[in-house]
Length: 149
Image 1 (cartoon, rainbow, N blue to C red):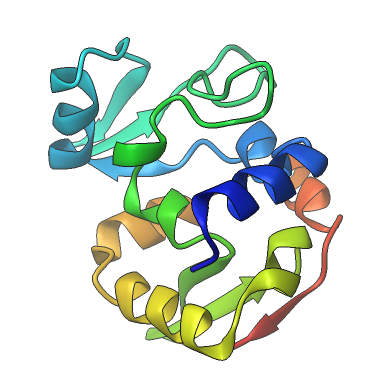
Image 2 (cartoon, helix red, strand yellow; image 1 turned 135 degrees about the vertical axis):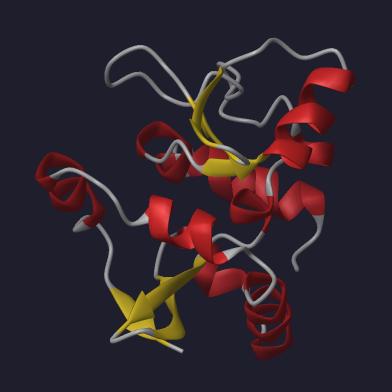
């Protein structure tokens, strides 16, 4: 993946669009890691081992700082780490898409393959929960195009 400074610079220029609309589902282990590191609890339980990062109404991720950097960068959830590669299920088969956000243009084919490999380890329950989004959210996703990997 690009260096942290490149990543942060690109995301700041984009105003961290992904973090303003996506509140990813996380595993209990990811939630516990964030809380054990001393960060505030912004989670609601969805299922036995699934939590959702929660923010008030349409506000951005509560871990997004005012300068559009990530407060939990070093321990952020896997779905955040692999962005803009997104795992999904289509016709009961796991697949992947890549969002063509500004970060996309800084990724090498190796970066994309690494993110895809990491996306393969995202539990099915997390992927399923990720795609349970409202029609309003689907409209917001149309800001950028994507392609299947």
